[in-house]
Length: 102
Image (cartoon, rainbow, N blue to C red):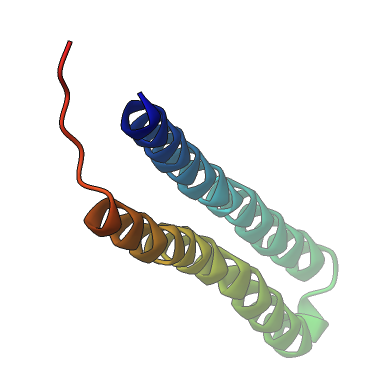
């Protein structure tokens, strides 16, 4: 009975790992909204004052780059969550092989 409980604990850990990796990718939706805000603000500022188009373009590119950096951290965290918990679970499974008998 102890091995079966351990197996359920491993399955719960796997499920939590997948949910955590999925939750980490939600940040890419926020980054997409941020990029839209940066570009729309750039368009509005150029429409209001066309003489500052070059200067505002530099700020828009900086805002785009910083927002894109957040978007690149989201998949990195998802892969990190997946790989860290995977190694510990595989070690646990190798130490305690399961045999299900009703």
